[in-house]
View (cartoon, rainbow, N blue to C red):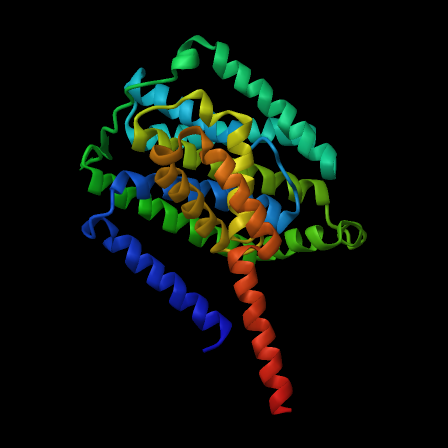
Length: 319
């Protein structure tokens, strides 16, 4: 079985397991939270894995959408679908403003600019009257999707989140395989060469940044509806670090890697929280260091590299 067929088989098997999960006794809220963070990690991977831009402030866009959707649905009486769309657009708008400032910087300078601006967003949410400050935005109702689907039912909400996740996953695959995605890869591999070929590199990177922030916002909007609240932890710099961890752990520059990384981190947090309390961060950090040493390409990256080595070895033996 070649690599492409194995990938399709793996995606199909994963989808079947996700479709069956609520009927297998697995807590739907946990899987929905993991799916929201998988969308978040996929958004970040589009920026880091395929464009080569490291942002340390992606929590700002996640939180911008989370707070916007929560307030619009709870206080303004908007329907959940309009709240999600509005949250996603607001995250994209914030991303556009940050991108216009940061995109001309490279490397660590770009990362530091995104972190600094994200901290400004964090303090806006801390001080703004509509966010609830340190108490957060509580009691966000799920409502009815399109006035028909009762999202208060966990299983209905689960399949809505799953449908959005599948759509985002498919869209990212399409973006990466499109001519635009090939230009992004060229920029990642050799930016001066891409400039010499006549590409407006800053414009391509800015669009990638806005797309990434919009998808991150979509994840934040869904998370608020799933859990019923938005808090300052959604905007904290530590969440920006967690999404980096998810992406690197699963495999940067792969499609399935961020998803596996998100499920791993959320699963560990859920499993360890009641057992070790605040030590969960230390344990996850230790696991991350061990995995980086043993799996420098991440879980999926190492698996793909192993398959490639086997293929080359068989070709050499056959030759």
